[in-house]
Amino acid sequence: MAQGTFYVYFPSKKAIFAELVRERSRALRHAIQEAVRGCRSRLEAERVGFLTFFRFIRKHEGIYRIVNQAEFVDRRLFQWYYRHFAEGYAAGLREAMGHGEILPGDPEILAYCLMGVADFVGMRYVLWDTAEPPPEVVDQVMAFVRRGLAGKEA
Image (tube, rainbow, N blue to C red; front, top):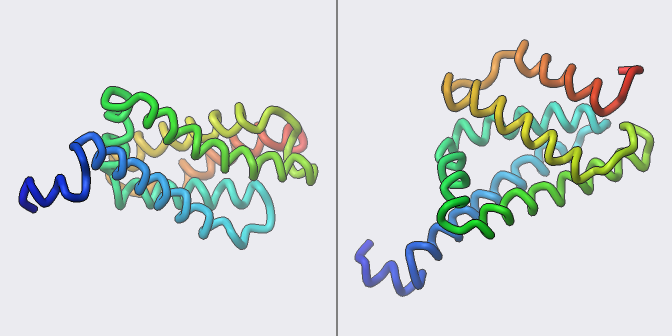
């Protein structure tokens, strides 16, 4: 694309960067929402959500670099990316708490904890190994999540 054409659609390089972060955020959230739509429990939704996230970042591995760069390019955009994701995540957790599926607590804090698990496990097994995490990794993550969400009875 010619430089002049680029600026017809975007006023700056920063504007296209912001649009890319927003679009990838929408695409990721949509992929996870669609994948978990038929889940019968919060724990099933967590497993399906993690697997969908891992598959998405494998297919779109640049999203890690783009989002991490956003912290230095546009700090508010970086914060928006995670806050926006956490809002939807917390809503689902709040609903599960209301149904007694998971332990009560602050759904926003819990959303960030679970996002951190997915982020770092995804980085380790998807980006560094360039493959979907082995089943035993997902099983270990879910054992951790199950104990954290459901308490001793898990």
